[in-house]
Length: 212
Image 1 (cartoon, rainbow, N blue to C red):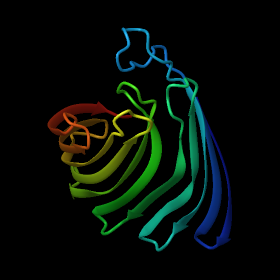
Image 2 (image 1 turned 30 degrees about the vertical axis):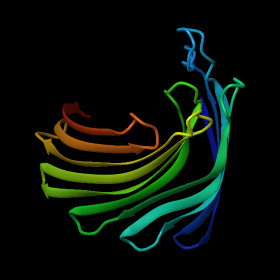
Image 3 (image 1 turned 30 degrees about the horizontal axis):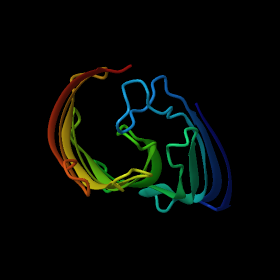
Image 4 (image 1 turned 180 degrees about the horizontal axis):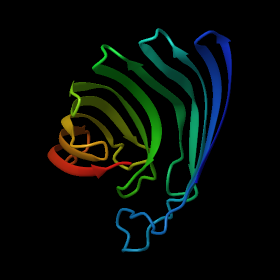
């Protein structure tokens, strides 16, 4: 479960300061695999954590709006074999209505992701990127995204750290108000300091959406 509480104050027209607290409890049915362990003999990956941040949300102009924050997070794993994850957290979410047809998004964040590799409980995950959405015509919308990330596998025996990026382009064709067709191409590149963990991927997805 996740609980979020927030309080804010508008100190100037269009500018508000806020303090946010996020508390979580993560439970897993299956044990995490540990190096050299027999199946089902791994460590329990359950954890509890919190994040306290302070930031500003603003409508900088009638075309640019968003929020930025910085704070501290801590994720404590119950099993002694996993290192806890703690440190500075941050976030940025900025939207620029460049034209009536084009929107530009700028994002950044740092959070804890639960690991799926042996011997590591959590990953300190930092990511930043931008995206563009463009209305080509009333029924056709184009989009493109690029992000760069750093993943630190806390407590891993090989001090694993990954850097990578993801780029995607896609289109959304709207047959009607409720029927949408989506086409998306994604390219992934991951460079790791651990042998055998580099990765390059190409993915094409096609979807049909019904929305009311």
